[in-house]
Length: 76
Image 1: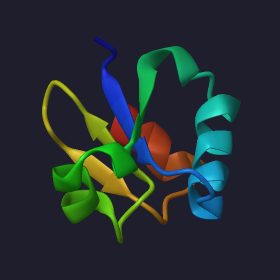
Image 2: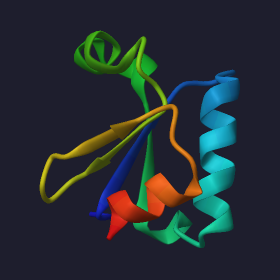
Image 3: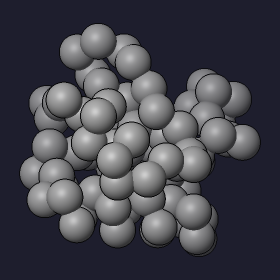
């Protein structure tokens, strides 16, 4: 399992922006993208909050909006 889950859904332009930050920081290998549309609990939890990155070890989350500095701080 990867350390982080990236909650997203198809066609989410904010998710695309956040994913670009993940790519720019070289973090793709540490993330698993989770498509929320396939799980009703994920839809209820993240539907209006995506994109959200969750640390799978600590359960801490960061939700949009965040910038590259906030993302780096969260991932440390």
